[in-house]
Structures are given as C-alpha cells and as structure tokens.
Figure 1 (tube, rainbow, N blue to C red):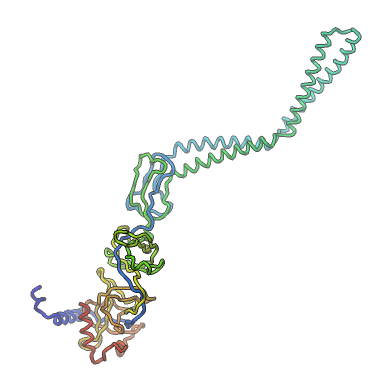
Figure 2 (tube, helix red, strand yellow):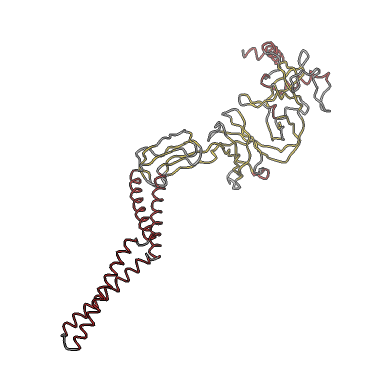
Length: 444
C-alpha cells in the first residue's frame, strides 16, 4: 500500500476517492453562505489547565467521633447533602439537662411576675390580726400593772415581766405588718428583672447546645464533587478538622499564562474560546480574572477564563488550549458560526466548489479559529478567501474529499443556478476548475 501511494499521482487518488465517495453516499443537500472580511481582534492561542471554580476543605465546627461517613471520592453531592455525622449521644443528654434548668428558671420568673397568691395574703392577714389582738392585750396589761405599781400594789418584777411581754407583742405586730404589706406589694422589680436575665442566659446555653447538636451533621456548603475523603468512621475529629475536599465544577476556571505584550487587550468579560483535547471540542468562555503579578522568570501573567460546565464534561486538571484577544482589530476572513464542525479534535468548515462533472461538490477543510464577530467567527489559518462558499447546513454529510452536493435554500428547495462567489477577487465562472484545484490543494 505504501508503494502504491508513492507512485500513484495525488490527483488520481483524489479522483478515485471522490468517485468512491459519490458512489457510496447519496448527494447531500446543503445551505451555503459566502465568507466575508470583517474587523476582528487579533487573537493568540495559549495552553492552560482546567481548575474547579472553588475547592474547599470542609471542616467540622465541633469535636467528636465520626459515626457515619456516607460519601467517598468521586461522589457528586448536592448543596445541603450529608457529608459526615458525628456521635451526638452526649450532646443530646446535655441538651435535655439544660432544657430542664431552663424550664425551672422560666417557672421561677413566672412566679415572681404573678405576685403573691391570694391564699398567702389571707394567711398573712390572719397572722397580722392575731398580732394586733395580742398587742392590744399586752398594752392593756401594761397599763394595769403600771397603775398597780404606782399604788404599790405590784412589785418591780411584775412590772418588768409585763413590760417585756408588751414590747415583744409590739415587735411581733410590726414584723407581721411588714410581712403582710410586702406580700401585698409583691416581688421587687429588681428581683423580676434578675429572674428574666437568668432565663435569657439559660436560653442561650440551650441554643448553643442545640447548635452544636446540629453541627454533628456536617453538610455540603455547595453542590460539587468529593475529591478527597480525609477522615473515616470511628475516628476522632477535632474542632476545625477536615472532613472532605469538595470541588465546585458547575463552572470551571481555565488558567493560562499570558505574555505581557497582550496584557492590555485582556479586558474582564471579553470572550475566549477553550479547546479541550481530551474531549475533542471547544467551549465558550469569558475572561474572569487577570492576575497582575507576573512570573518573573517567564514574564507572563496568570489569566483565568470562566467556562460553564452544566453537563459535568470538564474536569479539574484537563489540558486546554485557550484563544484570547492579543491585539487591535484588523480585517480577517469570517464565516458563520453554524459552519464550524469539530471531528476527532480538528475544526473544519465545508467548502463548496464546482463539481468535476458539473453541478457542485463540497469537502471539509481544517481551519484555525479566531475571535467572535457577532454570529460570525474569524478564520486565522490563512487557507480561506473572502467570497468562498461555506456550508452552513448539511455539513454532517460532507467528507474530507470532494463529494457531490445540491445547494438549497433555507426551505430545502434546490437553487436552479448555483451562485458563484462574488467580489473582485473571484475568478470568472469559466475558470471554476482552477478554483476547485486551488481549494483541493489548500485542503492538503
């Protein structure tokens, strides 16, 4: 086979491939558009690496024994999903104890607010009346003994004993009056306030324990992938100890090192295209961060491009090629974005040319992409001329070598006469075979 390919002319091989393709495949119907010159920024393609938009070492806020560890490396977890559960038995008992103390202090406060019970006031009033009666009796007895002593009908001992009993009854009456009036007035406002503060302090203790109890369930702070499991069931975790490493890949950051000469053109939010070799496809992104601190050895600046990753196709550590702005706008050949196809890691467009036996043929041509220009995109490979007819629909049936096509409009109706590329740079229709040979040469 190698001998045959060395000695058979390339033009003959192209003819054989074309005939074989046209014999095996039905004629494709395609919609075409002409390539045109547009002003687009100069671009540069840099190599870089995919990183997660954020990576966290999720830690435990409290210490304890790991009771349950339901996740492993590679697991996808939603925000709020359980990552780890610590043993909560001791905290549950402590919470029950402190809740009991809280209820006791609330009851004490409520008792003070309610004031003295009616039954207690009745009892104290009865005691006060009793002391009044006893005071009156001893007052009468005191007056009687004083008169007898003055008439020398009572001795000094009787006078002293009666006077002692009288003053004792008087003091008991004063004490009973004070107790009764205190009960009527109720607790002091300072005592009620102190009881309220005791309740508030105990409520704080209970809330603190309840918070610690909730923290025994360590939850995912955001949706992501477990990239490292850093503890195991039965292990002791300290406060602040790592549980898992969690990576957010809903959006990724592709980091490249940009030369200082293009730094002025790297505006935040500017579009950038990211090509992933491992996936054989490109992704649209935008410049998220321009880190203005150079690597002194290379004089390059880290630049991060943000790319949406809704299907989880992108993974941290993948190799990437990133096309970013690198200069002022200049005229460049552009084609509609719908014309771009990607096969086996290569970007192609479909080129339409005159067929060998009349009609039209099309083939794929590898190109290099530049900046976006609205719904069009720049071709920077230099192998496409303005005015060339480009396939925008039907490219999936186009081969790397010429195969017959029928040009149709958007409704699928064949166009009677194939339009030829316009502009002064185009050759007349009579020299169409020359154009075809040039196109075929560029494709190789």
